[in-house]
Length: 323
Ligand code: AMP
Ligand code: MN
Ligand code: MN
Image (cartoon, rainbow, N blue to C red; front, side):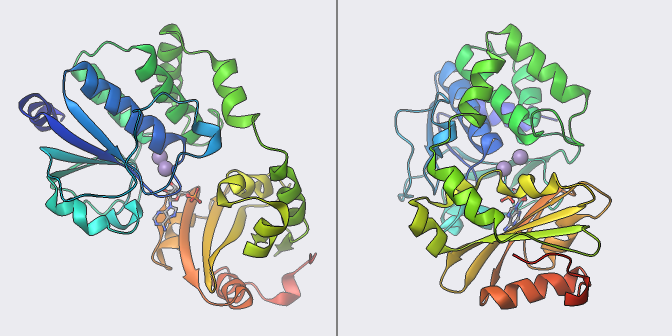
């Protein structure tokens, strides 16, 4: 299955590695682990990420320079990791098609097979799990820099080995990476217990917007640009907010709405029941997984909320609490 990629790697020298906007642990751990693997093989990899590395992931070892703009350079291949569609790379995404053979390695249900080569394992917990298979087939040496990135990617994309996708493979990979020297307590502290206090001021504001519908089956909350301004925070402080509302007893889907422009909102959905949120988000041009998905909707907040309620067949008479 990895034959073609192994050949491309061994015959090539210069590679570009990229992933999605608002990079999460899997995006970063996948990109950085592949960076170190290619380095260990004497290759010349570059990393491009539209957005900067969020504070909770700055501890991950990566290249000394992450590119945030795409030049006119060409590469032997461009690895697009953890992206269901090319658009997820962010502005300028079309450019990568002319920069080299596009190789998509991913695990999203909604993957569009946009690469020239596509390795998509929908049952994998994370993109890093797919890459782990590649690394093993290449018999690479799992140095600490590779191991800590693989571990963090698998660990965060499975919600600390708690979500539906936490199958034996995820545990086995984490175990192996711990054997290679990864310290779980250190990673957990970096990722989950290193927030600036402003995050909690913002979370307090967001808690105030919580509404539940349909006998508490659906929870909805939002954050506006004004709330970011008031608390001195940015969008990266909201990582994990959506999971927060899924913790409510009875809630099957949490919908978190984040303002990204004057009339533009990023929606994050989390499901813990049978409702497939990837399918719901794909109606709005987004996608993801059955239990975690996202999309963007344009309009005023009130209109966006109305559209979302309509997709869940909710009307205001079902609302139990309003913030
Ligand atoms: P998020 O809510 O941004 O944490 O994303 C949850 C899941 O849905 C992740 O696996 C994302 O890769 C995916 N996702 C989020 N936004 C989009 C989008 N606009 N299009 C496709 N997939 C998305
Ligand atoms: Mn991701
Ligand atoms: Mn992922």
